[in-house]
Amino acid sequence: MKTDDQIITEITEDTMLWQALKRSDKAAYEILLKKYYAIVLNYGVRFYRDKEFVKDAVQDLFTEIWNRREYLGDVVSVKSYLLQSLRKNIIRESSRLKWFREADKISEDHDFNVEFDIETYLISRDVETEMLKKLRLELDKLTKRQREAIFLRFNQDLSYEEITIIMEINYRSVVNLIHEAIKAIRKNWFTVLFSSFLFIY
Image: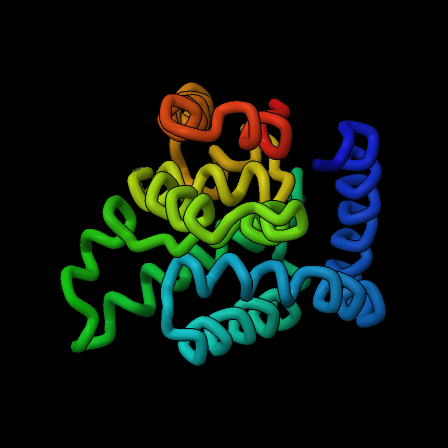
């Protein structure tokens, strides 16, 4: 995970780019687009599995940001703003699709496909395939919201405060989701291994 200093530096740089974007600086816009397009897309396809749908949603998001640049407000974190905006857009647009079942429940019961970098970590240490299967089983036991919170925290290096904005829940709920998720995994078979890799918060 990134250090606090690295996170602060990134947020400061992003804030400067965001302000430049609002002044119609196309170079600043292109830097943010290049920096965050893949990150936002990666989050979107875990939130909603139709990749083409998500690609369109991401493109629409960045197009809208440029077109409405003069009306954009200030943001604390560009990254969390983009992820939150995409999340809202996917929920809104997917609810309009006739074939999307129970769209009104997506905000509370959406599927969230988490694929951590743990598998690569384990494989690099010659961990047996059977252990990988057990790991996936344990991750699958987490609630969808726990998986999303864990993904944002550890795969996206977001702070608890940023996650509260994206998931639109309070700080204590975010802390509890992540704590309970890690505790549930630790309770089972690979306490030491998972701790050495992930549990730094």
